[in-house]
Image (cartoon, rainbow, N blue to C red; front, side, top):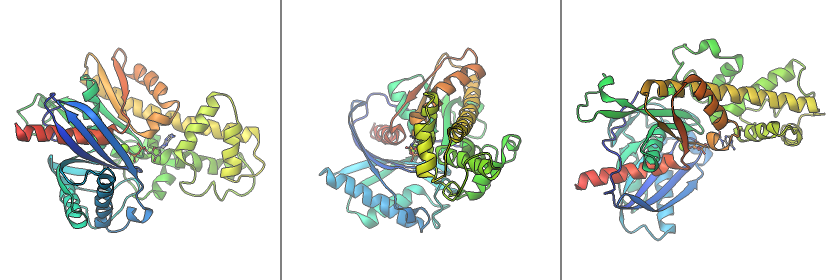
Amino acid sequence: MTNPFIKELMNGKENGSFLALDLGGTNFRVILIQITDGIFDKEEVEYYNIPKHLFTEEGTKLYDFIAISIEHFLTNRGANDRHYDLGFTFSFPMHLEAIDVAIHTSWTKSFSCPGVIGKNVRELLSSAIQRKTNLDISVTCVTNDCIATLVYGSYFDKRCAIGLIMGTGNNACYIENTSNIHKWKDTERSESAVVLEWGAFGDNGVLDFLRTKWDRIVDKKSVVKRTYTFEKCLAGKYLGCLVREALVTLAQEGLFCKGSTELLETHEHLKTSQISKIEAEAFRDELFYTKDVLSSYLELEDVTDDDARIAQYVCGLVSYRAALLLSLVTSMLLNRMDRPHCTIAVDGSLFVHHPRFKPLMELLIEQNAPGKSFSFLTTKDGSGKGAGLVAAIENRIRNS
Ligand code: ADP
Ligand code: MG
């Protein structure tokens, strides 16, 4: 549970151009937003592919890459000659001591860069910008993806009280009555956002009753092992792996596809985006795409209609379990908050692209939070743009 140190939301008095960065899972984004009297004038987003070797090399090299990407982004737009405040969405476990003091505590997902754990994320980024560029940038706030999504969501809908991430990883934050938070002494505000880091739910064994042998295999093959139990049951990075491992077992037991299973056994070969497409096809009661993935992509031999149906069934089970688990914890939040209506701001490709996630979650939440009014607000790149809004709010507070 983390305090994000967001003092206020937007009040219509924010002005200026602000930079935002979103570093979390797969897609690193640089964003420029322009705000006049609290209204978006312009927003530009560019995706930068992080070279594979930077996921594991010395952490300062990753920060250097980020700094160079910002310079590339601004130079391309002829906008590298002025000062910017920058909000940094950094979606890894960190201990926030202030809005601009974020101590990085561990890596998750695919990252394991040495040399940066225990350091202030803001200082690492500021030093890289100074080292690698001539840009005039103040890193004024560090936040994470779910908080930024919540802030971005509340720009569109004031009833927004949950920020949910379903991309490479999974996390959420919600609005709590400050009087219920015994850990923080904050008498200024009646409500505060709380970051749950629920990806780590189950690390103490409480979810062992539902973990399967495939969950354990996926954990064993993951970069950071024996942690982030909940996330590994349902996040985008792991769904394809779970399906693949279950199919490997079925093949070994002679129940699924014959011949070589070399590619089927290759870690991370089957992508979650393919699970989405297989799910969409299963819904249409067709087999063409599924058979193509099995025979052309996984190079399995003599793929039959039954093999394709088995693969679709496994994709359905793994997806359903993910949606159910996420719905249960989301329902718990809705029941706890007990608001007249709660808008849930969501960002992440899994939620956006998987054909069954949203409808399933709507159904399952209705069952598990009966009578609670809620709606989803999908915020494309909200997890980055929200950091720009946080920078704008901080700027307004500082100058008032
Ligand atoms: P990030 O996690 O870097 O913020 P995204 O929110 O775009 O980026 O999530 C990327 C993750 O979403 C990928 O790692 C992949 O697991 C998953 N994903 C990408 N495309 C799809 C898709 N079409 N269907 C389901 N999941 C997807
Ligand atoms: Mg993200």
